[in-house]
Image (cartoon, rainbow, N blue to C red):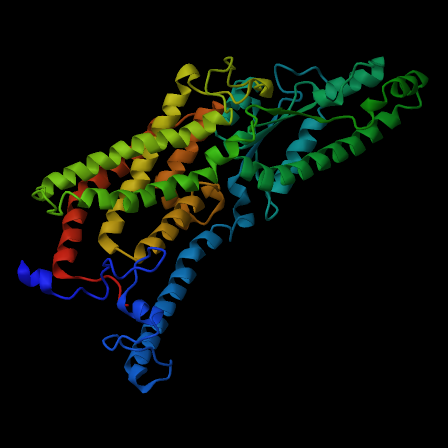
Length: 491
């Protein structure tokens, strides 16, 4: 002990005399500089081209070049996953199915008039579907839906297609009736329906589907208007018919139109982060929890006035503490959506085939229990995303953890924020990726959509189970690297 007391203090250790006037610690070199003297024991800086730095320069350049090549390869490979997701979108528009169902003149709605509107729409749909870079228009007979237009709506709600164009019963007969009787109450919007739900995927609907389907609807009204005008004007020589046409001009132009039924509107707009960009932060929070909590866990192994904890018990503690942290972190994440007035309190019940009123907010799926289900989905999402980050971080260490985060974000975003069916088949693995389940589940919870919540939870739980099984092995590998001095990085 006396020997230790007589030993000169290290120049890198703060001592009472190694302090500046403002109380900051100074090392030996800084103290000497303050006194106008040079510490003879401290090596003096030299210029970059000093011969004594030759070996260091060569090593630094070689490792800089290697690091740059590796990062370039990572950028080219991993970022390409995101760019490639949009590479074949026009070619894959056919996967975005739109039903065309012609009830015009079909039994039991046949009134004897030769159908005009239905055949024009159906034929135009067939021609459009045969063109490249167009939606997948497909005609189905009314019998496929038991001659019930509401069952067409149900099929859209059940995700069998992205939209449906319904030619209403007696669409042509109503045109003939309008000009033969002068029915001033005739409404062109009663001829055709467009049924869809944009909350299924507002990005896909607004960016890809609606612009193309709007062009189709414009062409429908133009074609029907042209052919119907010829038929109507052939009878215009009859003074009574001409008088009726003058009384009901809307029966001549535009003749027909589309009533639009958005069964589940994407509203309120503050739901956007909850089902898209905001979920990136769920990944980031899951990732960075490793760095925040690891120093706390490691205190059990440092014999600072206490014996170290048995390693297998440390593993158990780490896992339990991590899961407990996810409970509260996912709660905080979920409360943000609640704070910005997404509806979690129970909207009036709405049938699947009816349009929800946005005045009531988003039509939550589980009434008073909606927030609890939403929280649990985010909790299991954090487990699936976070335990994978924990295992990878222990396996590859720094600085590769940052690259893993980029990879994890890109692969999850590419297969969850965008419709996988419009992407190359390579991306079909995304149906099993964690964030895809969180996004799909969140949409069904917040907008009362067709639910696959059991599948969503099942896949997330499976991710958690697999990563839990791998967790002890990754912990032992991390300890082995520390004991053997294994370095993951060459610098």
